Length: 140
Image 1 (cartoon, rainbow, N blue to C red):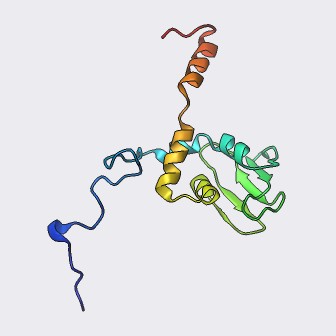
Image 2: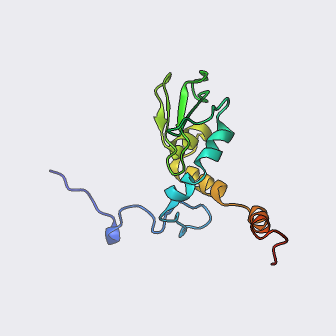
Image 3: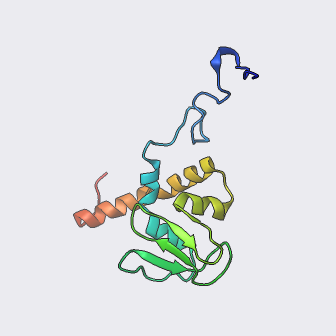
């Protein structure tokens, strides 16, 4: 049996620090990136699925599938932290990351980066939230 040839220094071929970011080679996604992304499940699906119904008591809503274009065939789990989806017409399904990846045609790393940037509230939204919480202008 032929033995695999190892690179000098025992390197597996993957760059050190090759994380999920594009800003620097040492950037990597936070360890809880799935939880951060899943916080905006309902908002994400309501913005990206046309004719989305109100969720049932179990948290599932139906809408038009953006992949096969069939009406009211896509079921999505709108509960925070879930993000599951399945089309009963074309048979596709998965989680929120897979949905965005297929919708935008991105690889996994680019998908996670994009979803994390969408999940971060803007500074303006944070200030508005503080104002509503404290009933006036936020000091800063």
